[in-house]
Image (cartoon, rainbow, N blue to C red; front, side, top):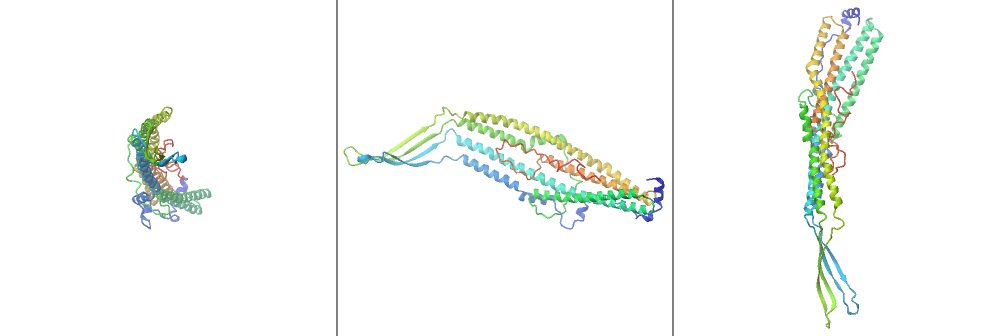
Amino acid sequence: MPASQENAEHHHHGDIKAVEAHYPQLGRAQTAAQGTLVTLDQVENIARQMNPTLRQAEAEIRAAKARQQQAGLYPNPTVGYTGDEIRGGSVGGGKEGFFVQQTIVTAGKLGLSRDVFGKEAKLASLEADEQRLRVESAVKMAFLRVLAAQEMLDARRDLAKISQDNAETQRRLLNTGQADETEVLEAEVEAQRMRIAARMQENTLREEWRSLTSVIGQPDMPMATVAGDLEHGWPELNEEEAVEAITKESPAVRIAETAAVHAQSLLARARREPIPDLQIRGGMEYNNELLEGLPFAKGWEGIAEVSVQLPIFNRSQGDVAAARANIDRAEQEIRRIALTLRDRAASAVDQYANARLMAVEFRDEILPRAKKAYGLMSEKYGLMLASYPRVLESQRKLYELQIEYIAALEGVWTNGIALQGYLLTDGLEAPTRPGEVDRPIRETNVPAPERTMSPGEGMPRP
């Protein structure tokens, strides 16, 4: 603005309303809330009761234990009728009777089968533990996104008001000949952009609320204001320790290790398969053939059979070879998962570190300076040493920085929660069924790019 125009404006404070410095502040939506605030503890309790994936994981444990029980049950006996030479010819001979047949399982194969399915029950239990972590992380992240969207909406509404104030100021200055139509139009365009950004943020807040109510399993929960503090208590992580913890302590690693043990039990069972089971058969037959020279039948006679299958052609050699190959695959899966976790953790750690750097710098350096500059500009205006548009410009910059600060805080929280939760973030993904070794790994899924972003990324520009 030319110096002559600015000097002229100093003498027209009567045309511009008096200014009082207003600084951005977090938590205003909670202070102004009409109803009861929703807390993180409340939504976590709802998720424990209502999230369907937790019930699925519990059902899978019951199913695995039932399969373990079934695998150890002994084969049922067979009872039947037997007959031989029943017509008997003219002498009325022939035999009729009954038998009982039983398979005797040898070589401890039933115990080994129970052990195989016992490992599957262990896998189901680990999957349930992992699913609980997944739901907890997803609920926390969804809640923090609602809180951040709530704070962002206040800041964007403030920015829209500042832009509208600037547009009205420019129109008044136009009336006094201190601004031209171009400046008025530019200010009106900017005000319209900020109104649109505020409306878009309202939509974003509704979207985040829908995501939260979906992951807790109560989609009809009416929209409300959430209670929380973005600035304090955020996850404090050491980058190297976070990566190592995910690589070594993640449920995905324990699942892979248990899957390898499961593969070993399958090999042990396959090795015993060639050992044949005994087939035992016993019973009684009534022999109607007459005794020599006497009009009496020979009567009841016992029968007994013992048979065994000779493992000549089929010695389960294919099953044994396949079991060995599965062991090799399972052992390599442990290493693959560790490397995958390390790779994906590195990306999340990078996002967390960047967001934390921005949040700290904004909190300790940038925002204090911007607030001081705005305050000094307001004082200068009161002393008729600065124009009102300059005050609005200083205020606008402060609120733009506040928006970036909120985005950085959201990044700290969401990426920190993801790292603390071993990158388990999708609270509505169904738990894996035990034994689905060929399914692509999903225990290590990181936050989707469109749901967790770097600070400031994807936000409407001020």
